Image (cartoon, rainbow, N blue to C red):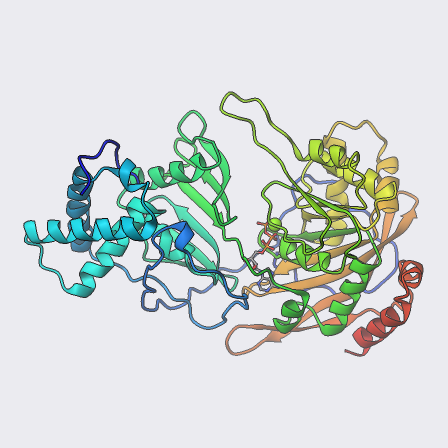
Length: 506
Ligand SMILES: Nc1ncnc2c1ncn2[C@@H]1O[C@H](COP(=O)(O)OP(=O)(O)OP(=O)(O)O)[C@@H](O)[C@H]1O
Ligand SMILES: [Mg+2]
């Protein structure tokens, strides 16, 4: 039995994509640092279903994620619990932490720690004469173990692999995204103090702290999930936590075809784009599937190539043997030691890369990436936030302008045109599905205008009785894309011609 404790409570929907197949020049969009999102109708909430049992007592005990075809059916939601439950739990929890020594508990493996907690909780229940069924006791024990050993009420959500995002807006509002749809769960925290403790525990694992004086923090869970924490006074209604769940088994291009995100012929074109070392930008809104798409494209990189990836939080999972993964570093508590994406991309160039992959381009590193693309590192790729390929190009331009490079706009456009071969647009549609909505080539510069040409566009045709969007990926009749020669060089021109033919007749 443990002695007295020594520490406290541980514990873009595309606008129905216009069928723009033309190779004609379109005026360059004005450079805008932040692109407006197209309107997204509010999502209907799925029905609540019975609670999944919280079985994972600690991050280490979380089950391995199966391959992730997002289930389309109803969303399972943890049940809403009564006030009485939370009162009983709070009494027992307080008695428990008075009794145990959490530092000693932390040295045990999760199973033994759980057994220890189980014994003490059973004792407390009998001493305090709490009337509970066995099932209720089990559920309470799970809850308490999660509070003491793991991430508290978040544990059951972290254990589920169908969840893409967990969004905690203060202690009483926890939302999840499943199959592209956001719904509120019945999960709640005891109070903002408990939520704050959990935020603190998460960020301390990456050597950071979050409090009034440094109220914003990015971190990563041990399983690789990306976390953002923002706390009061900046977050007005309490600590706010956003988690992008890490999927152990990433989606493959074949999965995207299965889900209808791209047509089989479109997938073939993407495969050729990846294999024949086109420089690619993947553009899309938040959570539209950019990183996933980038990851699927990297599958077609030749295993002999040396690839260097630069990310803010390592999400990519390249399967090639010769990969160097780099990650940026935020400043430490004293405000020093920051390593930016630009630092990483610049350093990359001294590491003899054959391809450079930038998780997300959002600032002046755009210039270094384009320079790399222009200086023999073809096949480089990156993602950025934009709602159309044209907007992606103008965002690149504004990133460079705002990065303090005093270059005339025409020169910047020349660099962009020379560097970028293809822009692929990803979008989350209003029914929650993710689609590749455009594959667009950058052709050149006419006067001051960047000329692009769509190879494939997604056309929305309507929706079925369940509100799911029907549409099709349509070829635009381009027979010889600009990267034709490149495909020929890699011996892929016949496959490319066939894929283009198929898109047209699709
Ligand atoms: N085509 C798809 N079909 C179904 N689910 C998808 C698809 N693409 C991505 N997802 C899922 O959507 C979620 C978000 O994907 P991803 O991280 O790739 O988005 P993102 O655009 O990079 O987001 P962010 O802007 O936040 O970086 C993930 O859980 C991923 O598994
Ligand atoms: Mg991403």
